[in-house]
Image 1: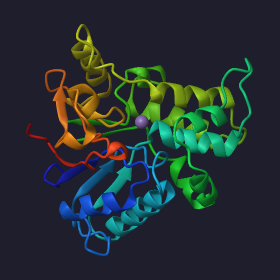
Image 2: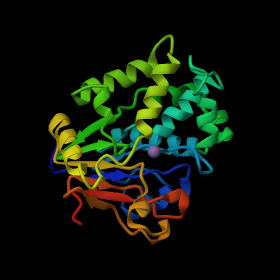
Image 3: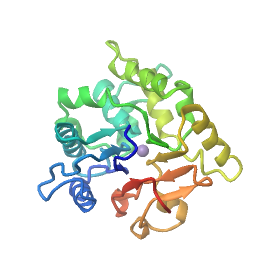
Image 4: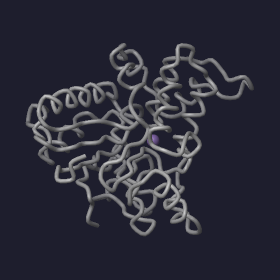
Length: 267
Ligand SMILES: [Mn+2]
């Protein structure tokens, strides 16, 4: 990546299409019509487009369109997979089928985690092809971009390329395996690795020394939960673990802000 290009990350949106458009417009990345105006910016969405909010697939449509428009310009738009994308895809693929032990099903998890039937109904082959080929991790400059604040990515590989290859292979397999898909959902739903008082810094160091980068930038865990405040009181991202981690989930579905964060973030 060209280090001189502006870099932004966007936290969890969960179906809040209008709020996303407003936040991108405020950052100068889209115009009043919602079309790309970010010129040479590099924008990474950190996943969780769907569930808990009114129009998750509409959000995906917007991001796919911005990706096309940025590509026609000199910008770049992409996204890492969130656990809710895996949930959306898993329920689409497996419905209420249970695993071999009869314990887990995407149907149950989908219901419990804010799944929206309207999103399932709106899914097209084009959405499926795009979602199933998004990476789980990416590097942008000194930043390691992931959805979830967890070390479980290490279970899939020791390089970004290997992790992404494992995830894509599972999601695009000709004969999808419920257990392997559920493993994706379970690991991407884990949280809090870098926030532990005792070993949070070590866990962040482990991720960075393995995958590269100087700061993990993630969504998934609402900043307000750590600050002990309500989501609307959140005003920006949270740098922690000695600056090795940056949380950017403003808690949109709980009334918090849609955070569009320029990197490097100067706290
Ligand atoms: Mn999440």
